[in-house]
Length: 260
Image (cartoon, rainbow, N blue to C red; front, side, top):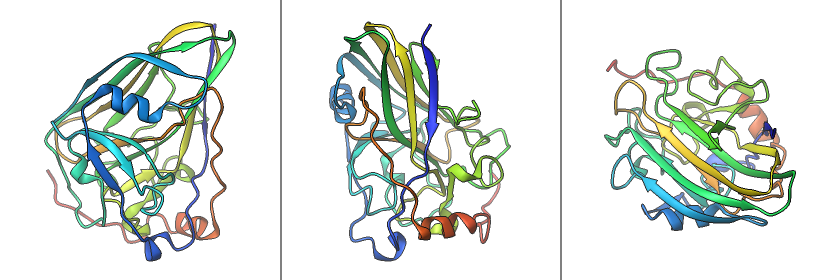
């Protein structure tokens, strides 16, 4: 039996991100499964049989300048329920939508040593925040290792709109209607680290799956840090004082948007 666990770590917010960011995140659209998968692979991992299915023709891509936009890491891939056009900031729309519903990236990877581990860093974000928390529009994503979801908080809850927000597990949530990060999504998690330990030697399967719930409006997406899917964990720095002050302001000044 392999032991699955997920470690949620606070993201670092470099001082005065929102005020002094020198470059916004830049996404290069691609639906090439091999390009996407190889962009996140790090040490100790070899992959094969990458496949991709996109919500739209512009549902995914690689990105740079993530750190200067406030994401928490600089490069990687993003998979969305609609379009990557809803990723770059500023946060000047409360309902950015791409019209899709589901995006999936799958691949196999090889473990050469028995009882090994894998790790990767990611951020979940959505336009569904904050108005549609605890509603029927609970966009979700799964990170399926051999069919088991490892996108979980330390308390075992899956990472979703309804489980990570201003009221629930708020230590792992960033309200972008307050913080003003240079990203379009109204809310994002901190940088989270998913991990699986005790993997048997041999071939394992992995799938990233993001899904719109209820309708195809109000995009959501998962950002996966470049080169962090590996057998060695990539450290996530401690949050800065500015970040902690920002987290203390969660829930203040959230915008209202029209009902669907």
